[in-house]
Length: 230
Image (cartoon, rainbow, N blue to C red):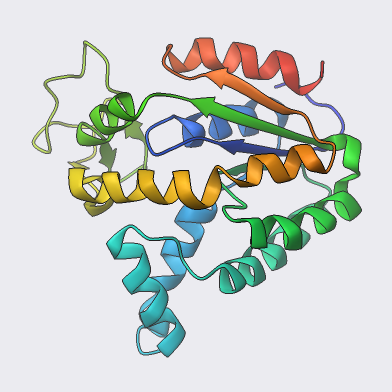
């Protein structure tokens, strides 16, 4: 594990770009916390204790249709969690968040206060829409350890009847990875997330673009190089 000064790493990319995988690698190699906002928000909207809450019902409906959740609600939840991680003295890695201009304007000043402007590093992992759809159509996740099965030549014949190569658990396909939902998520990414890159640049941040169609290990090698050698 490589340890250094705590930083806030933000990794973007359309569905299937590999931002979650890269965020996991950054967290493990640098001792940071991967705050997967998508999974965290998903856990909230499917929390049985909240199932009758009107806000939870509204956000679950957005989530299941492939649309982005309400920015003000997302910002409130993410800001609170981020502050707890920073105050514990830990670096943080976001995968795909903040997702809208509204969230950027609300969260970025907090990150600057908690980590310092020079310790915020932004990445875009770029893949084509065809690669995005292909990867998501074949995405399998372990029900036990939560690990995704990478779509490689060795795993292209894997199905929900196969076993997780990491722990032997059962595999499943997420409802979010249906082709019709993925297409909606790509449209949402292009309409609502892509425009915020200009906002980062306007605020003087460098946005690092990395081609994400290589193996995850190769993508991570480039990403790692840029984290402490901006």
